[in-house]
Length: 288
Image (cartoon, rainbow, N blue to C red; front, side):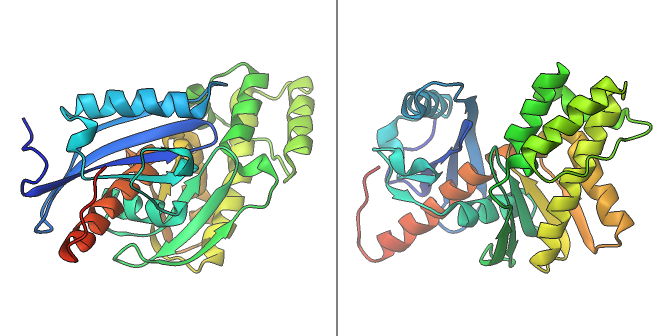
């Protein structure tokens, strides 16, 4: 059973409110800068429900999984659209949170690509997760998770099936459009021409990978690039990004982690612990 609040460890909750899903991470960090432990985590799709209702249920369930009550948390940090959370202690910008979460998941990472439901952003950072620069996709959704989900729905496959199907492609069909609406029209034409589902999906993955790679190179990133966000679990997209980097001889190594989807929530929780300690050093008492 964890020690109660006021003991040697700092315990924080991180909440990442996205456009389509909410992610929660509860961490415990030694005050001497020692090991950081992930006590519990959770992810829940919003699915047309009120985001505040979803996050309250998810957050309560996650802290119970951690064996804690809300009162035993030293800091509750939010990111994304988390400013709507009434019980937060503090809020952190998404790029800052994703950079810190990516670095925790892979200490060799020097850039992160956060692929969200509506937007994608490449974040350049240093060895302390300080954000050095960033680039974002335009307002068009063709490089986003929502776009890929829409395509999957048209093709009759789930988001979880898209990645493995992409790996089965033997003759990918190029999808040249960068507009979501026109790209969906391309897909309809492909289906009518008898192009197989794996080859359609792989062509889309290649198009998305090319856009992501341009974002990454525009930040002048090199070395390990960590993919965060929900599409980090798409093995077909990761493979297309690695192939694009190799074909263009770009000096980056694309990596992902099984907990990449939690990078924002995890990073927010870690920054929360950092801020809690800094304020405590100044004699400022916080109550989550």
